Amino acid sequence: MVHDHSRFHKEKMISNLIQAEDHLRSEYCPECLDKHLTSASAYMEEEVSTNPEANKRLLELAEKVRQIRREIQEMENMKHTNDLRKSAKVV
Image (tube, helix red, strand yellow):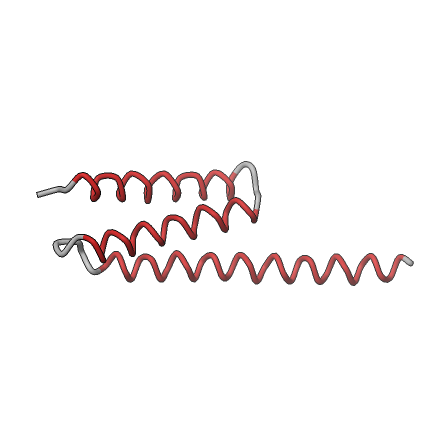
Protein backbone atom coordinates (compact mmCIF):
# COMPACT_ATOMS: atom_id res chain seq x y z
CA MET A 1 0.00 0.00 0.00
CA VAL A 2 1.38 3.39 -0.99
CA HIS A 3 0.85 6.01 1.71
CA ASP A 4 0.21 9.65 0.84
CA HIS A 5 3.49 10.67 2.44
CA SER A 6 5.31 8.05 0.34
CA ARG A 7 3.90 9.53 -2.85
CA PHE A 8 4.90 12.99 -1.62
CA HIS A 9 8.45 11.84 -0.81
CA LYS A 10 8.82 10.17 -4.21
CA GLU A 11 7.60 13.26 -6.05
CA LYS A 12 9.97 15.49 -4.09
CA MET A 13 12.94 13.15 -4.62
CA ILE A 14 12.36 13.03 -8.36
CA SER A 15 11.69 16.75 -8.63
CA ASN A 16 14.88 17.68 -6.78
CA LEU A 17 16.99 15.26 -8.82
CA ILE A 18 15.57 16.63 -12.09
CA GLN A 19 16.25 20.18 -10.94
CA ALA A 20 19.80 19.21 -9.97
CA GLU A 21 20.30 17.74 -13.45
CA ASP A 22 19.04 20.98 -15.00
CA HIS A 23 21.59 22.94 -12.97
CA LEU A 24 24.35 20.60 -14.13
CA ARG A 25 23.40 20.66 -17.81
CA SER A 26 22.10 24.09 -18.70
CA GLU A 27 22.21 26.57 -15.86
CA TYR A 28 25.21 25.52 -13.77
CA CYS A 29 24.74 26.81 -10.26
CA PRO A 30 26.63 25.14 -7.40
CA GLU A 31 24.42 26.72 -4.74
CA CYS A 32 21.25 25.34 -6.34
CA LEU A 33 22.89 21.95 -6.90
CA ASP A 34 23.76 21.80 -3.21
CA LYS A 35 20.19 22.67 -2.23
CA HIS A 36 18.53 20.15 -4.58
CA LEU A 37 20.90 17.29 -3.77
CA THR A 38 20.55 17.91 -0.03
CA SER A 39 16.76 17.94 -0.37
CA ALA A 40 16.65 14.78 -2.48
CA SER A 41 18.75 12.80 0.00
CA ALA A 42 16.68 14.12 2.93
CA TYR A 43 13.44 12.96 1.31
CA MET A 44 14.98 9.53 0.71
CA GLU A 45 16.00 9.22 4.35
CA GLU A 46 12.62 10.48 5.54
CA GLU A 47 10.82 7.89 3.41
CA VAL A 48 12.87 5.08 4.93
CA SER A 49 12.35 6.35 8.47
CA THR A 50 8.57 6.86 8.12
CA ASN A 51 7.64 3.89 5.94
CA PRO A 52 8.51 0.42 7.25
CA GLU A 53 7.86 -0.99 3.77
CA ALA A 54 10.31 1.39 2.09
CA ASN A 55 13.19 -0.14 0.22
CA LYS A 56 16.36 0.17 2.31
CA ARG A 57 18.28 0.76 -0.92
CA LEU A 58 17.00 4.32 -0.65
CA LEU A 59 19.53 4.82 2.15
CA GLU A 60 22.30 3.67 -0.21
CA LEU A 61 21.01 6.03 -2.89
CA ALA A 62 20.85 8.88 -0.37
CA GLU A 63 24.52 8.25 0.46
CA LYS A 64 25.43 8.30 -3.25
CA VAL A 65 23.61 11.62 -3.67
CA ARG A 66 25.50 13.04 -0.66
CA GLN A 67 28.78 11.82 -2.19
CA ILE A 68 27.99 13.57 -5.47
CA ARG A 69 27.20 16.73 -3.50
CA ARG A 70 30.54 16.52 -1.67
CA GLU A 71 32.42 16.02 -4.95
CA ILE A 72 30.76 19.07 -6.49
CA GLN A 73 31.65 21.10 -3.40
CA GLU A 74 35.28 19.93 -3.63
CA MET A 75 35.43 20.89 -7.32
CA GLU A 76 34.01 24.32 -6.51
CA ASN A 77 36.52 24.79 -3.69
CA MET A 78 39.38 23.85 -6.04
CA LYS A 79 38.02 26.23 -8.70
CA HIS A 80 37.72 29.03 -6.15
CA THR A 81 41.26 28.41 -4.89
CA ASN A 82 42.61 28.46 -8.46
CA ASP A 83 40.71 31.69 -9.22
CA LEU A 84 42.23 33.28 -6.13
CA ARG A 85 45.72 32.19 -7.21
CA LYS A 86 45.21 33.62 -10.71
CA SER A 87 43.94 36.95 -9.35
CA ALA A 88 46.88 37.15 -6.91
CA LYS A 89 49.32 36.76 -9.82
CA VAL A 90 47.69 39.61 -11.73
CA VAL A 91 48.32 42.07 -8.93
